[in-house]
Every structure is written in C-alpha cells, then in structure tokens.
Amino acid sequence: MPTRWFAFFVVIAGLLLAPAARAAEPAPAASEAVPRPPKLVDVRFTLFKTSEVKTQEGFAFEGGNLFKSVAINHMAVLVQHPRGRFLFDTGLGRDIDHQYRQDMPWWARPLFSYGPVTPVRDQMEVAHLGPVDRIILSHAHWDHASGLPDFPRTEIWITQAEKDFIAQRHPGALLPSQVDSPALNWKVYDLENRPFASFMRSRDVFGDGSVVLVPLSGHTPGSVGLFLTVKSGQQYFFCGDVVWKLDAARLVKPKFWLPSLIVDNDRPATLHSIEQLHRLMVANPSLVVVPAHDAAVHDAIGYYPHWVD
Image 1 (cartoon, rainbow, N blue to C red):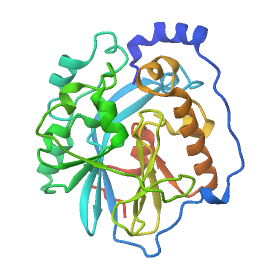
Image 2: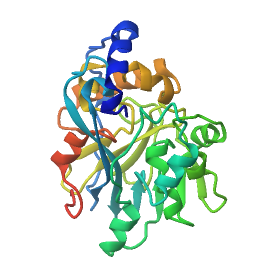
Image 3: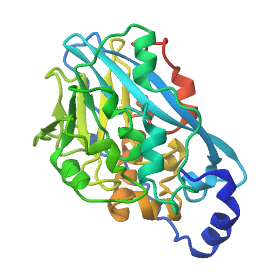
C-alpha cells in the first residue's frame, strides 16, 4: 500500500494521469445469491493482525479522499472446522525484515511498507493454539506469503495458476525469499466445475458447504476468495486483494493507478472481479465482505482472542 510520505508526487501525478473508472450497477441475478450449507457446521474463525501501516484513502482506490488517513492491516485468518484448522494467508512473518531488504526493489519501497510486526506464528504459540493442518493462500504477494517459512512442513494450498505465477518474477509484488525455499510444502489444488453463487468454479474444502474457495483472478492469475458460513449461520467472504478498502467494492473503483500498475497482474480482469464483488454484495446484503487490508472492517469484527462463530 502507498505510504503517506510519498503523497505529493502521487497526488499530482494521479490527478494528471489517472484513468476514469467504469461504474457498474447491474441488477443482481438470482444465481448471485450465496447458497447456505444444507446443515450448519461448528465453524469459527479469528483474525490476527501481524502489522499495521497508515496511508491515504485516495491511494487505496480511485476517487478516495487523498487527505484522509486510513489504517491498513496485514492479516492472517485462522479457521477452525471440526475436521481441521487452517490459516487463510499468513500476513507478515518472522523474517519480513530480511525478505524486504533482500528482495523489495528500491523504487517500490516508497509505495509498499509496514509497521511493527507481530507474526501470526508467534501469536499462536503464545496462545498455545497448536499447529495448523494447512495454509491456504488468497494469493502469493509479499504481504500475504511472508509467514510461510514460519510453518515448515505445513501444506500450502495454492492453485496451479498461482504456482505458475510464482515461477515468474514480479518485482515489488513477489519476494523470492518468501517462496523459493525447498522446505516449503506446496499442494496444488483444483477449482472444480461447480458453480457457487455467481462463480462458475469452486472448491468445497470439507465437502459440507461451510468453507468454499472461488476464483478471483486479475490481481494475480490464481487469486481466490474464501466463503465461510460459521456456526450461527452468518456468512463471510474473504476477498483477498480484489479491493484494499470495502468502499472500493461499494463504489466499483479500482486501486489507485500507480500501485495498481505494480500489483494488479491483469487490470481489466481485476476490475471485472470488483464488479462481480459489487453485484455479490448487492444480492446478499447480510454477507460480511472482508478485504485483506481494510482495518476498519477488521476492527468491527475483532481480533484474537475474539472468535467469530
């Protein structure tokens, strides 16, 4: 996320060069309703904040207030299911300082930074939470994959498209020191040809409809979102980095043009995913949509030791 001290250059350049965003207000289709599991399962989750940084709202999405400061989190989500527990992303890990110094290009550092770090592995150990069965990545960018080396031998679930993306080099977005270790235990999984809401493909992780992965390509080729239906019946959608702030989905706005050039692998496809997310929210007003970095949304949900069930 862009940092405040870089504001002057970005504001001026953005006013001169930023393209206009398309708006989308199509009527929701019946197929966009999120299905509920046939039987509620004892599923719960908790949020771990691994770091926080301040930026300007206008850097997070086009049309945002360039003079309004907002908090941006680097998060990990711990999900507990009767058949196992997993992390959705890792946030920033124990070796982030080394990873960042070694691999983050000098020209990207003014745009992408982080505050004090408390790795999710450390927080879990202090809380005596025990191991996780797997880590599912929303995508492999540096602020989502930093903690992978902290979980040796743990299965890391990733789509083939994202694994292929990792094999290429994307300066400023991917840090090789996070994903190149031969000790990492990658597990490539497929999304099946089973529609879920407006998504034509999905992966029902436990086969009971409570934990479902869907494709959100654009930001990266293999990005995925996570639908959770917790024990109470409330449904949540963790949408990764399709948007950095929830308001961008409400308004159908892309990321600010400069960071988007670096992190959005396919900008038209990313905007398509934003439009799809917008329609999903309109069709499902009770659905809680959780962008990976929106601290205001995270604050409203609460952090560990608070569990959502």
